[in-house]
Length: 93
Image (cartoon, rainbow, N blue to C red; front, side):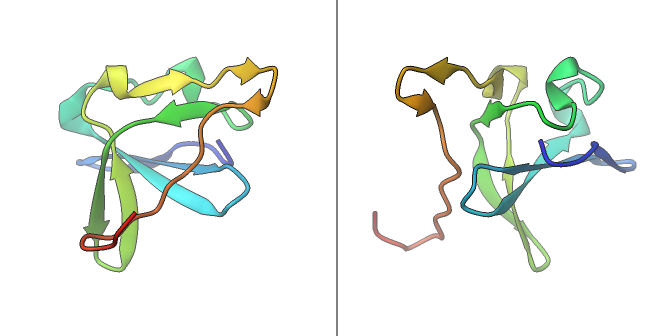
């Protein structure tokens, strides 16, 4: 988490993370019942987010589907797990 959660009423909340490869916007849609006030969403916390890629205007975002898609990131002996992966439709792996 790079900054406090940003309200986007009435639709949800914006969360910003950066794993060192660049800033990524996570969008918490109100319909998912993800608690934007959860301790997970405090600046400086490390989180892992699973979701689908979406584009709203010129902004690309990751949209988690439910609370299960957002977890605290844990450290391993090889360093932090997880990273932000940016893929566009039609792009090959």
